[in-house]
Image 1: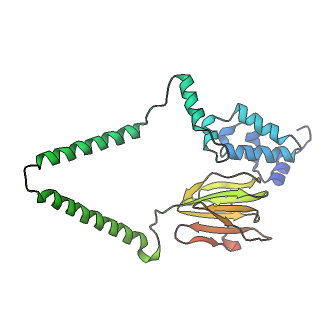
Image 2 (image 1 turned 180 degrees about the vertical axis):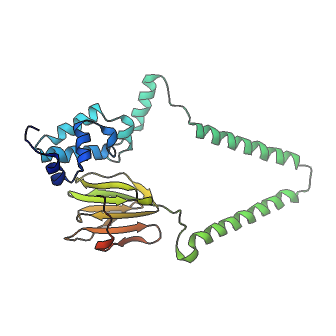
Image 3 (image 1 turned 90 degrees about the horizontal axis):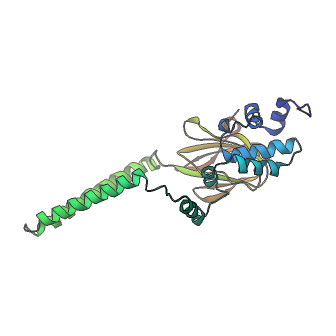
Length: 254
């Protein structure tokens, strides 16, 4: 406001949508995609206004970023000993989850049933356990074969196969990343060099890159992007890997 700069000018300069700029000004963090993007927005916004971007990001981390959010970021990791120490000081642990308790109970029931079967079948013919084992082995083999056949039918994996993707910019780069059902995982943002995005998982990705200054990690394997003077894009699936998109096929997040 002091510089008399309109929001639309900053939007055009930073490529950050006006509603996100207003959310930053009003500290409405719930309207923003997540802590990683909040810090990226703050850094880009501060640089556009010639402010201290490091100070703004650090202030956000101290006052607004929850520890649970920081733990989810691939750049910042929390040591195990530190988390354990926090539980020790509070005198309370989170305790086992409900799913863990259910799994332990189910395993216990299976063990009891197996013991009962062994005890009850002890006086019978010695061929019974062998027959049961052989039948179970055949059923398992048949199920595995059926699963494998369904997965490779037509020369492609099952439709439920997911591929993982993360990005590491080497310079400022515009990214629009679309996941399953048209979900905008990275809704048209400028990523900064040195950052690493969350590892996304989906059956299919479509991505538009403003330039080639980024390294892609597909299922943990680093992939370079071919140099290009224009926007480039890819379709990424488990079955076909990474395939280039034509200019008319590039996804748009605007």
